[in-house]
Image (cartoon, rainbow, N blue to C red; front, side):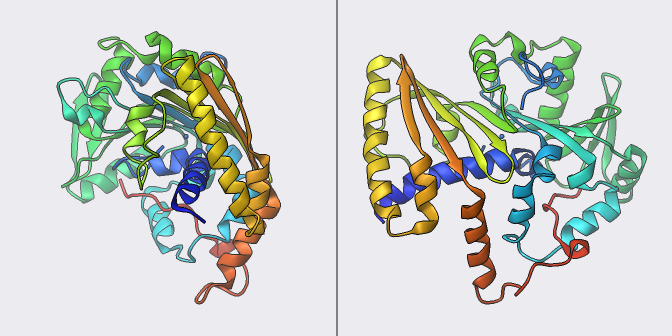
Length: 341
């Protein structure tokens, strides 16, 4: 398989993983690669996102965690549940059952580079007294800001504020305070950003979605991008999760000529991918599902990852040296790793 074909498949598959794990990846707060909206105008939590956000993403964690796909993906995870168990023991939070959905955002550096750090808003059930006590034991700082208690982990650029009884804002201190300012009306929120909201409404049909200015994510793609790639301004992915994954990725280019050029580039990459996937049955179903279309400045790529492909990947993972010979019992299944508050 050529380097360019591997890049094409890698980016496509990476976006799928990002769509599945937006909320979990965002929980690392050190940065994320990438993310259903409730209602046509997006979730209420957008009121905490500043207007100059360059990326917004959402994942319905409860739906994804209860899907057949999640059960299959368990088999691909390392059998090391100690960290998530310790996190649950210390904070009382079970990520799989206590988090309903997550909204993440980034961008809008302004005059403060800290504001470019990501913000996560998690809706769920939290034992705030227990978490605050844990932070105090570890020497964490607690301050009042616009009537909200902001907890900051000692020695780290990591803060959390329970801005509503069932809503946690997580990020560095500047990002959390700016979210509180935005909700209070001191900073305009993202619902006033016509470009972002237009695309959010377009993505309002999946278990997970992400909307981003392309230049905010292109520099994060390992290996770079093909040099002949036409200029792309916005990128959107929306996916549905059940036994497998199906969804749509689309790019909004600078003009119609750029969109046509992008379609030509993608057709060439898809042709190469189909040739190479013919030698790898595991990828052929995914590559064959790709459907390319376009209208005006927009290029759309539909995709589907069937359950059978995920089963084959799981079987390969289990066949590797050192992997468990059979699935772990439910009580020992690992949960997604998360940082301590």
